[in-house]
Image (cartoon, rainbow, N blue to C red; front, top):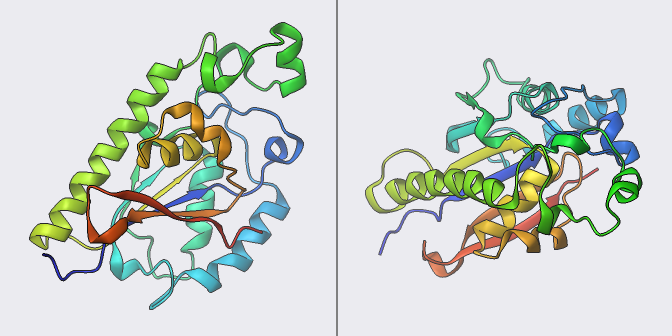
Length: 220
């Protein structure tokens, strides 16, 4: 059995935006909105508590980092690690973008219910955007990539312990649900706050037992 520390995946939702503040659905596939001033300040206050040698996010432990290309996610990443001489190596990619809301882009839940009073993103997906099946497939592919990175570290000593994803609310909830091998629809039961940190790892030092170990850590 490996004596290395159990590998971890940190998932961070971007900081506050105008739409996350007022409950609007913001698809990162189509709308690129910035952090609010409050969102920026909150992350600046959070960063010294969690980033640095021996802290929760230690750049020396980071092996792979995925960042959504939407400015609110990338700005969150930059603000968290701005105290370092340089940002940790990272990949900016569409794989970790938000669920594409399609025709419901920018609408409140109330406005969507006026179109379809029985609609639920968790069972219906989004017309003109991503279906439940498409979202499941995309997130499962990211998880498979993380699992293989973790396996190589834990079993072969390749790389480092930690991986990090900086992304969005619905994406994070889907990822948490699929990480613990639940159907996507159960993601509705995980509340992910702006700038909240989720910690995904494994029970009993067994990579076949993925677990949710922390939710909304340090959420403001």
